[in-house]
Length: 355
Ligand code: SAH
Ligand code: SF4
Image (cartoon, rainbow, N blue to C red; front, side, top):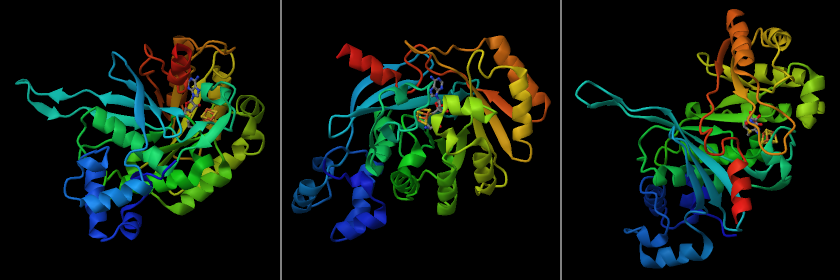
């Protein structure tokens, strides 16, 4: 596998490419024009392009499958140079707003959900990604390219705002060096210019790595996949909870640098008969007291072979109302793309069956 031009910050590229001003031009081709070959880089001399082509690829990903939902969600199956595949999702968060004359007053808002690994080592029992075990970490360029590839496919101009969530396949903090590099490349002013505030790293709670991410001071948000309020159930759902228990996560979150106006997001996957009762809601309120938290309730998304079930809407709403009544900011995640294969890992599984 050759390294990709998307593996590098602009400064790093300038040390690899002589003369260094060419790095800035190449950054423009990669992140403003979304080119996928050296041929398309019009103002770069042929000799330099040939030299670069020997060592690097431009874009390390190709689209192999795509499912489009009626709600605007698009799920992509992307292939890497070694033939392995992973998923990225294009999420429409807000429709285009128009005035009475049909003029656009605000453009539609999108979020891209990126993967960080092929498979995952954490092994959560409810997660389809975990089923196939762990294959490998994604490189920084493979993370960066998911955003470039999806923006290009949707003709989303480089200067239009976009949010990134690290909520696809894999545990971002288990691949922290490459994830941190990707965060920095996304932030590059002459590249995609996506600030830390627009990037949210979701983790199953590797508490020591939450501290490390905080020390890196990248300005990103974190989301904690909590899912349970006591260690017994959490260890059943997320086996590595034995090493990083709820208390150690809460302590790490308290140390994490966050913007004073922002809150830490806690994701709570609701599974029927497991954690959907008001007793759990009560414990959750207690656990999060003293933290600037907001809770995102997620319906468990079933897949063939899982013993777990989706909770009822009534239980979900009751849980949500309890948290709100007790002062927590809480939302129920609307299951985008329910008609396509919504939960992460599902498109990959489906394509495997078809092939
Ligand atoms: N590894 C990280 C990020 C990727 S998973 C983490 O665990 O946070 C992103 C989110 O999808 C997590 O909150 C995870 O718990 C959730 N998830 C996994 N399987 C799911 C399923 N079957 N239904 C609904 N959400 C699921
Ligand atoms: Fe890994 Fe996240 Fe799935 Fe758990 S939920 S197995 S941490 S991807």
